[in-house]
Amino acid sequence: MSFPWAKHYEPKHPLMQWVDSRLPLPRFVYNAVGAGYPVPRNLNYWWNFGVLAGVALVCQLITGIVLAMHFHSSAAGAFESVNVGIMRDVNAGWFLRFAHANGASMFFVVIYIHMFRGLYYGSYKAPREMVWLLGVVIFLLLMATAFMGYVLPWGQMSFWGAQVITGFFSAIPVVGDWVRIWLLGGYAPDDAALNRFFSLHYLLPFVIAGAVILHIWALHIPGSSNPTGVEVKGEQDTVPFHPYYTAKDGLGVVVFLIAFSALIFFAPDLLGHPDNYIPANPLSTPAHIVPEWYFWPFYAILRAFTADFILPAKLWGVLAMFGSILLLFFLPWLDKSPVRSGSYRPMYRIAFWVLVADVLVLGYCGGSPAEPLYVIVSQIAAAYYFAHFLIVVPIISHLETPKPLPGSITEAVLAKTGA
Image 1 (tube, one colour):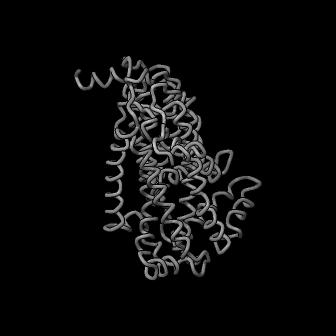
Image 2 (cartoon, rainbow, N blue to C red):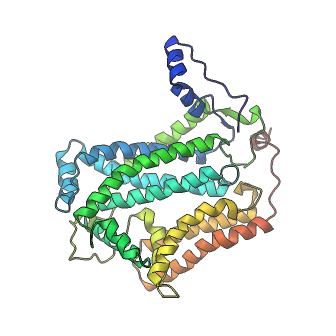
Image 3 (cartoon, rainbow, N blue to C red):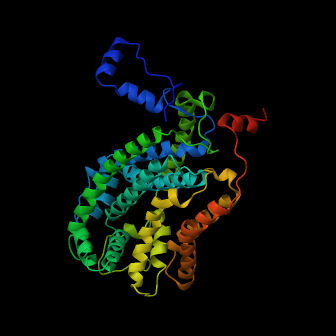
């Protein structure tokens, strides 16, 4: 979408004119995040989380690069390099380690809110399908990066998490064992696995950064969505990104950094597992093996399959776990409602909040022991998760009677203010 009323970059200083004529980077920045990029005038604070995800990624890149300078990727030295070398011998090493570990959790908090905002307001619908698809790709890359990073401290939960999760690949017929051996570089997590995971954990964030650039590029073609789901009708529906939304995003960044700092300085181990302060021991299995909290919903889906039916239960669990994410790629075509925003879709709004509760239940069950009660609840919640996307959403899109949409974004804004 083109915005004929958008301001165009015109450098005043001779030096900037010379630079812009030979490398139009100033013009690119101006059109991407400056006054040259008009955005809907009714964006609320739920739209801050895209910028917050970028801030979290930058924090992870900076802290990760410095930590990599002091990390020993060997089974004999990984635990000591993290818990002694970095924490005690490196200047501000404790801060870098806690910032990186808790930064992953903050990153996932932001990403989950960002994705659920997209689900509620229909940001995956045409013409923004590519924005949504690239977002799901980023989510997959982020999960892979986080899993490999969790293995690197080489504590008990790191070792056994790698052992259990990679073990599920062996359920794949014919090539499963080969894939697992290829991932680990052997038959069990050891030096080869650490080197592989460390290399990929260092590389993938830069791949994520590239995917984020494509994500933003795809967003700038149709323009940002908005809470009403109504497309921009003209100049009166937009405001320049700067200074209006740079100020709004700035407030969000300040709140984010305050919460992030409170986690680092006052509760750095709140979201971690105490067993990871015990060196990895292949001969001592923890009583309860559990991944990081942001994997719990998918871990619950993985464990929900307990009986063989045509295929082994283990294989069903692996297929369901990956399918629960891959399903998101098809969402733009599963939801055929012409109305985007959940604010104008009463039935969809109820289904959305049921899905939120369902994911929270899956997360709770994923972090709980594999006892019969939690397994049964996981099975029910996993069944609803797939039913929501494959059955509930398509049916609602055909049966629902949406509320009347405003004629324009401006009309919606003025109605809200009583004008």
